[in-house]
Length: 80
Image (cartoon, rainbow, N blue to C red; front, side, top):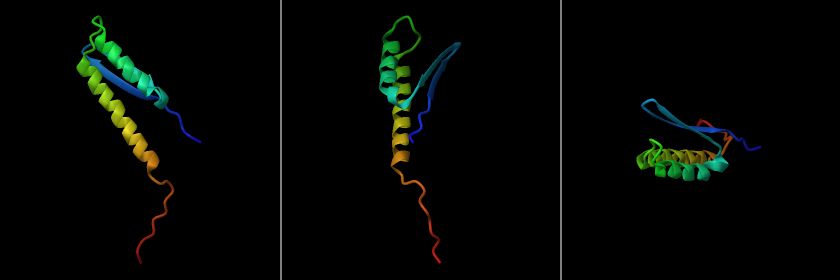
């Protein structure tokens, strides 16, 4: 049975806190939201911030994908 967890992505800029909660299925939507925040002149959220957080999301996806492709419950035998 697949496990569904919540991912947390946070950015602290001085007194401001940007905290994003998302699951694996909504990662693409989060990436779009980061772009919208960067484009909003009323937010203290830059394109650099969006790029940095987007890179973290992508790396987490890659790590998760790699861990899923590794065989589980492998029995290792010691050489005699």
